[in-house]
Length: 231
Image 1 (tube, rainbow, N blue to C red):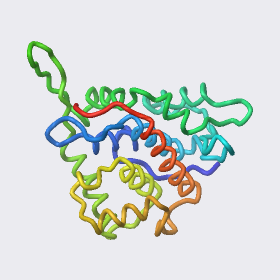
Image 2: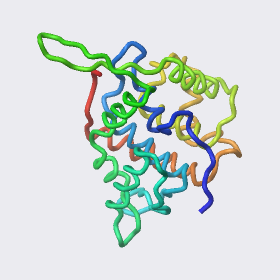
Image 3: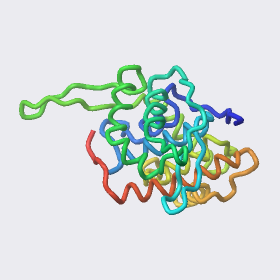
Image 4: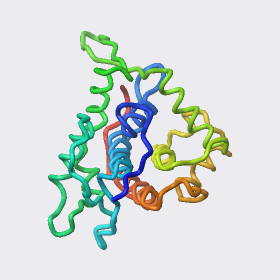
């Protein structure tokens, strides 16, 4: 299978970009379902890197087929690949996306911990009524660059490639667009991209199919519950 060459800006790929965007500049995070958003970004990243393809499983809906099991040498990517390898059914060579989302409970916090360890986030220890907890803050420069990039896409100042098509679709699904400062016309453009409109020739057909399936399956998973709030 031909590998899609788009790569995310952070060392944690699209899942890391979602984690940064979900975090508020002054600590805490948006979204009632961060695990679903990050699990969707993992699917997108596996497709981008040529490890997986979205396939139709009939009554089970869309699935993720495992195409390449070779480790990538990145802790977060290899952990996701290992989970995918264990969940794939022999009969289909794939796992239903709904099953994938369900299996990734706690994935937001796992990425958050790794990113706090390696730099894109930092944790500040606090205490309330004698109870200690950590509040997490995103790297303002990296997060700001992502917000600017999405804004340029929304204003149609930047062409959409494979990575941006997937990122825009997942961000739209989180309901974050208003929180990122986008006005109605900009949100409308991102929504149209999430629907697969005006993607342009730079977006691979495989990625286009993945975008649609991820949006539908992610929305269904979110309505079924998720961990919420806070930081």
